[in-house]
Length: 230
Image (cartoon, rainbow, N blue to C red):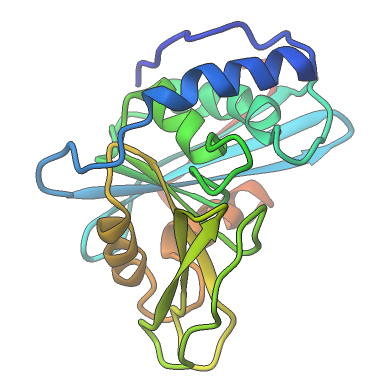
């Protein structure tokens, strides 16, 4: 799978911040795709400076694995909240480059525009891959919201300085919300609908669950593993 080189990755935090401010204006918050037939999830595990990055592709709406790659590579950028894309995207690109099935949509366990500079991991990855993406995060990075009703499907807007940056969505009845935000090339309403479609049983989308399993060593059938030096 091809991707675009929008900037260098060997940057300081100040340079990273400038890149975020520059690229956030390129994010498209409307649907720019045809029918969704495949959805992908991504995850990263890091140990001793080595990242294990996973990309798992499922068919839609059946949510069965059709392709996936787990790839190891060295990681250099430090862990700094608000800058995780500079730490996690380079290893993910190693996995995406070996993927055989190009996904129609990518769901990221992280933020899209629900970010202080409106350019979280989902937006950054979407711009580089030129693919529809959105974030479905377990926790907030910024913004406030009113707690939605306890039933599955209930939601409320996540706002920051009066800007709507996402939604707090209940994917299971009486279970904690997830935080959904636009990444790139998708609307917030469609991101909400796709989140619910990908959460038939659990709080998190099946894409996220399978990608996490793969990144932590429980590699599902149909996913290939690439060692660091391969």
